[in-house]
Image (tube, rainbow, N blue to C red; front, side, top):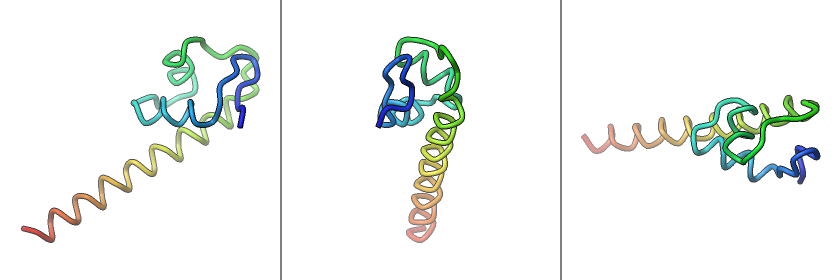
Length: 71
């Protein structure tokens, strides 16, 4: 689904930028090539980024728990 109509950025592209370290829409958009234009998409983009960060943190915690069980 398109999130940013000005730049043509899709949800998966924003999620991928978050997985690569972007923590704000501005960072994600710059990683994708252009900064935000009209800025109407920023709340939705931030929600996608927050979701990806939360999922990554959950995986880290899950991985640490598995390592702790082995020790």
